[in-house]
Amino acid sequence: MPDRQTRTDRFNLQALYETSRLLSSSLDLQFVLNNLLLTAMSKLLVTRGVAMVYQPASRTYRVTVSKGGSMFNVDDVVDIGEASRILQQDDMVPEVLAEQGIVLALPIAFAERDIGLLCLGSKVTKQPFDDAEIEFILSLVNMSSSAVHNSMVAEELRTTNRSLDTKIQQLNTLFDLSQEFNAALERERVIRLLQFALMGQMLVGKHLFLLSAPGEGDGAPTFTIAASKSIRKPKLTAEFMDALCRLDKARVLSEDDDDAAMWCGLRETGLQLLVPLHHKNATCGVLCLGPKMTGQPYSEDDFEFLHALGNLAYVSIQNADLVEQQIEKERLEKEMRLAREIQQGLLPRNTPVIDGIELASLAIPSRHVGGDYFDLIKLPTGRILAAIADVTGKGVPASLLMANLQACLHMCVPLEVSLEEGTGYINRVICQNTSYDKFITFAQGIYDPADGRFDYVNAGHNPPTIVRADGSIEYLEKGGLLLGVMNLPYERGTVHLHPGDVLALFTDGVTEAMSPDEEEYGEPRLEAQLVQHRHKSAEDILDLV
Image 1 (spheres, rainbow, N blue to C red):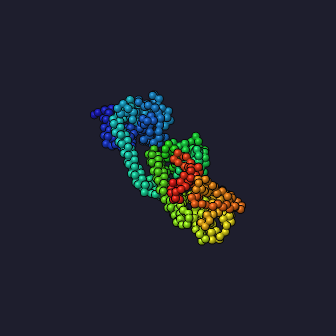
Image 2 (image 1 turned 60 degrees about the horizontal axis):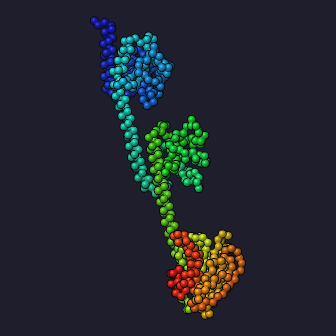
Image 3 (image 1 turned 135 degrees about the vertical axis):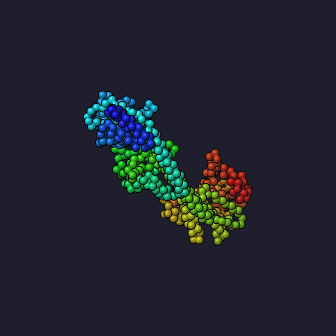
């Protein structure tokens, strides 16, 4: 009959074989380490044990299985240094293990590389481990190392696959969202899509979306709140916005931050994560998020997804703003074209025909509408009234004031008041209806073909110029202050036009016109043209100028 030692050896060999076969049948790391630890504890009569796996990146051990009331918890990280040999009482078990009642620690190695650690407490008999027990547990660990290694590889593959699945899901989500964002032409719809994505994909209930706008002059950008949900809006101080501009990567808010005071306002509102968005090396926006509804922390994958999502929303908002600006621009251009048609209708459509003189006129606004004005009105007596004016400024404000002037002039004509009285009346209306910085240069005159007499009043306008038949020049300057300054009487001037004389009324749009080299046309050049071509027809002179 075999002696007791022989039976013990056979029993241990059988235990080793059964345990090895059991562990090799599974690729579940938790299952493998759990059964390895239970077998060791049961064979050595130990009530406390821990199994750990080695983490090369941090050179620490992560607790995977804990039994028998050990103070270690699963997923605890333990730093015990290298464990390339058996550690027991005589070998000075590290203090971090000894404090938990561990008296024996055996490294789990594969291909001469540490992959884990099996830690056991003292035996229930209070006796030390003998050589046979050490040999058994060492054999058990050595035979199990391959199973542990395979399980770790399988777990790493599963983790990698899960990460890949998550990446693929996020990419598909971003692709779908990009189509939705591109189809959204309104800022409000883009904001709603972003909020739905944060709640549906990230399970985040609280968020704040800040967008930057260029500062005035050389100042730093300012931030505005584009969207928020379930939070109290923070105060956007200059110091806070400056700190946002300096964010270069995602930041999890914590009370341990060195500049905790800077971010405490955000934490108090329930926000936890800041994700900066960058465009042309500048912070264009910040996505501020509260905690996940699941309670899980944000991962690096989350940071990447949120950064891509935020930039997608930012670009879509920019596109939506551009579309809105284009629509507004087209609307304004349509209104300006209509305004130009209305203003053109205020100018004489047909040149009056008067015996003994030739008339030609032209008005080209520098914009759709402007403040230059002229008029030719044939009076019932056979005379003709010529008027010209230039309103300060350009565009719509000038065109409105020009329309006011046109109405006043046409109202004075039927009253048969003198030129100086009519100019005074127009001046009073302009003074009452405009501010101190708005005024009009104006000149008007009446030509009588019966005797060639031309009565005129010049209210601060470029002097109408007479080029006599002999080439001499005469300026019509009598009148008074320009319109809209103050109520003062105007003086009338009188000249006579003779055959061959040329009378030119013009605004500074002619004399101040600039060449591509920024050379001004100037009054001397205009006068030279008038003198040189004074023998031509009125239409030819106008075309030559």
